[in-house]
Amino acid sequence: MATEASAVGLDRNQRTDEKAVSASVAGRKLPGRSKWRKMLARPPVISALSVAAVLLIWFAATSWFQLAPAGRFPTPQEFWSSLRQSLFAGYAGGTLVGHVWNSLRLVVIGFACAFLTGVPLGLLMGSSRTAEAVINPIFSLMRPIPPLAWIPLAILWLGLGSAAKVMVIWLAAFVPSVINSYTGVRGIDKSLIAAARMLGTPRGRMIGEVIVPGALPLIFTGLRLSLQAAWTTLVAAEMVGALTGVGFVLNVAQQDIYPSMILVGMLTVGVLGWSTTWALAVVERRMLARWPQGRS
Amino acid sequence: MALTTGRSLLLATLSLLLFCTIWFLLPATGLVSEQFLPNPVAVLERIVTLIGDPFAGATLPTHLSYSFGRFFGGFLLAALIGVPLGLMMGWFPTLDALATPLLDGLRFIAPIAWVPFAALWFGTGVGGPIMIIFAGAFPPCVINAYQGARHVDVRLIEAARMLGTSNIRMITQVIMPAAIPSIIAGLRISAGLGWQSLIGAELIVASTGVGFMMVQAQANVATSTVVAGMVAIGVVGLLIDILLRRFERAVTRNR
Image (cartoon, rainbow over all chains, first blue to last red; front, side, top):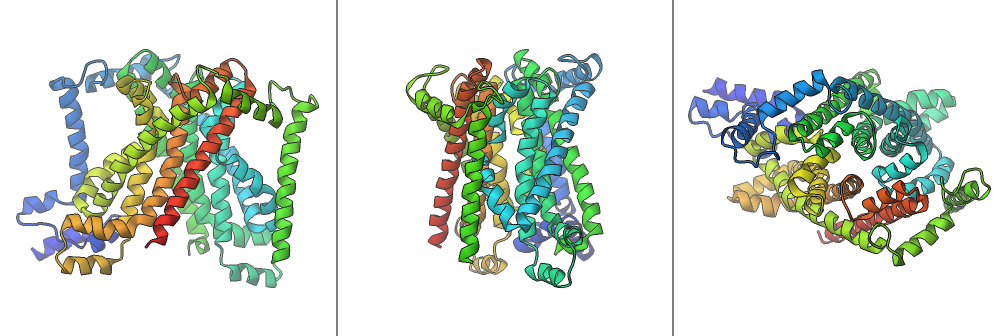
């Protein structure tokens, strides 16, 4: 019994820090009478059961008992055939891979523009009072306008092609990059900067070895938010006006009243958002391992 | 210190003046056409006109009231469901394990991607947009309430448990009060995301609201009306945030 209990405890601790916190805060013993109940009460098992239950309810409600009104909720079979159709035959003027490629390209370009302009601007605002005084008022003036509200103006300026989308993605991803880089610099220990300055560190080394590493964790927080904003904005921009892309698939599926294709589009958006976030997290881990001084 | 603050103020004023001057001069000198970028005065005039004259079926205040009504409905729904769910997830490990994978999956789907289903299930009038606002505003409500509940002082919980507090009283009288700052911070994020999701929804499907007005203006190449809509959206978004910040201060002061 004792070994089993410790195995459960170990498993819980091995998950994330958060889980460890939960185990200690809640500090509740699992109601373990039988082996089975104990097995089933383990968080990973519950999570798997929960996902399975949702899938089961979906099957039951749409396909087996037809509780959901037909034509409004896709059945799993319809979803599967729509997925095959979009992958092989193509839908809305291209295959799913083509649409994904177009959307991904726009997000990467817009995100890269935001990264290359936003992070340096945030670092500059954080390290120079003058720059802050000049830029902050204009920045505060534009910030309350949500990026999605720029879409009509971007279409008027640049048309329905890629340029308008890159512009709104850039606008959306720019703001979190700037704010978090700025906050990151402001959060660096003042004595660290004073010490570096006293030792006569030249400006280039000051930026490369004190400011950027110190602000790195928050820069990445900002980039993660930027990435999320970039996807939201791209989907919206493609739904308002586009000729290709995942948002366009959603739009056409909506007009065709084709629920299973809507689901294909939504899941594609989710998978893309998840995988790009994951890629960013990998980069973040590598970078923070290289400059660990920023972690404190 | 006073000198630097004075200098900052001066620089800020100068930079805003420069910004407005450039905005004014670009179309005025004919460098870009008025059709492309209307000058600030024209936008202000347009806003004043829109308050009296209808565009796309209603005046600007009427459009704004439609938008705000939808926003309020969706935001309230997200807060009323999301905050209790987050708090309970923070207290019951089983519920946490049940809900986390589902919420994690949903989090990566952009709220705007719900537009087709929202339109199909609830129509494009009130229900559909409310669902999209809900999709945008719900995750921060849950996440912040959850994290607030997780970071409650362990001694408080232990003391309460030693006195034999029930689960319900634990959540409402120990965890929730301690998590209030985190919850309100989440509500502010929610309000911002919800307001932005609403605008997106109105741009795509709706026949009233500021977003709809802007799409109509875009189709008619009425650039000044588009910019007027942007200003109105920005001002209302700012007012919502100011109200919530007031609320935050009022709540944290009474603690």
